[in-house]
Image (tube, rainbow, N blue to C red; front, side):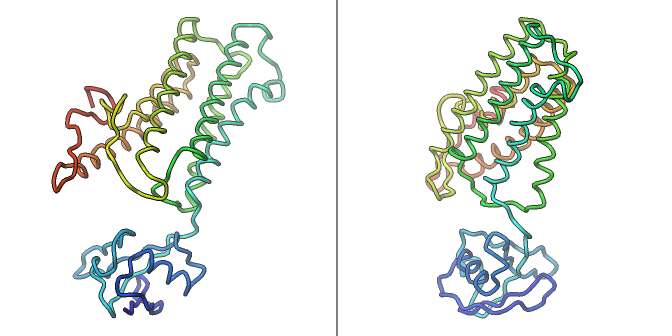
Amino acid sequence: MKIHVQSRSGKPLGTLTLPNDADVPALKAAYAKQTPSMYVDRQRFYLPAVGGAKPVALGDRATLAAAGVADGGTVVFKDLGPQISWKAVFVLEYLGPLLIFPAFLLGQRAIYGRVTPPGSVAAEHQVALALAWALHYAKREFETLCVHRFSHATMPLGNLAKNCGYYWGFAAAVAYFAMHPLYTPASDAAYISGLVTFYFMEAGNMWCHFKLRALRPAGSTVRRIPMGGPFSYVSCPNYTCEIGAWVAFNVACPTVWGWAFAACGAAQMAVWAAGKHRNYRKEFDGKDGRPLYPRSRKALIPFIW
């Protein structure tokens, strides 16, 4: 079958010859071969808009025939711009916080012109807090490299600065005050309970990530219903644990910027949790042999929401 490719403005971009049973990935591979600068991850194809309607994107799982593209048909090409792998994005955005927080502790004299009195309660707290922060991001780097399986290969390169700016900027803001030589430590009860809860939530978060990894075979986008443990109560317990960990960290290390970081992260994760919960319920509706998603399960907060 011959497929004509045009730009969104209607400019012809070439004609591709494909097997009759070709799917969208085959279309992308053929276009990348014809136009090497437009590698597969930069491409998105649409059906031409009809009657003023919005163009319909062609999903990678569809065959061209099933999507309504016949021999001699036309598809519309969109350049998504330079891309970067999600794995590289996560490694870079987490590397900053991993290094920045301890740097403020180790570089106190250079940054503040003085150091926290050695042997003081504040000094002991700062060492433990810097370690907790660094271990959190070391865990994230490990999960990025060894645990997570990404359903999307890349994201636009232009978004990298925004992602890194968020994590690196908050890390510097929180560290500046938490590692300051004049830092006022929390009470012993708040400090101990906060750190214990922080590590408990971190362990729960990692357990959830391993559980989710086991549900998706390598190289696939298969979705299954996660079961057991905190998944019995909420759809996204990994986010619940993440939010709980940062609340606990701020109990042990109260700063305005720390609470702001926790609030921003919680707000974003609440949006993600709502979307994933909605998709789970929509996909697993009990129809046509599909399993029914547990209707008593909440999105993020057990028994509440």
